[in-house]
Length: 178
Image (cartoon, rainbow, N blue to C red; front, side, top):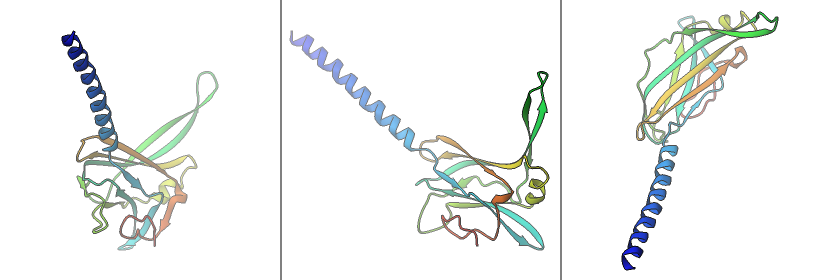
């Protein structure tokens, strides 16, 4: 009888320990994802009589982000009629170039320095590209891996011509354009 009670206690404690470990592991993996904020506006300023367009990204994680990959695409919405006579949409995408090479790492969020924010710029004339068609918009995609958990997250932001503002981003975690 004592043997059966010992076996039951061992099995029950193993099940409870397994469930508890699973919950903690799930919580740690879920909480250890990159946390980013991308500006809602694109800053526009002049350097050497040429306009530069800039998007700001802020790392809100308490750890390094690495394997950064980001893309800015000009998307044209094309309407066409299918064989049934219904209208449908096709998206034509052109990847735009950045003025500097891609960053590989972002520092963790800190109030002591500003290395946790990236300003990603392009020299392409975004206003003329966006003004050609009402169905044209920009899509900015940003992918990063978390330094502790190695989990990945993809962020996407859409911009139209109304989101372009003259000025530069202020330092730090603010998205204010002056």
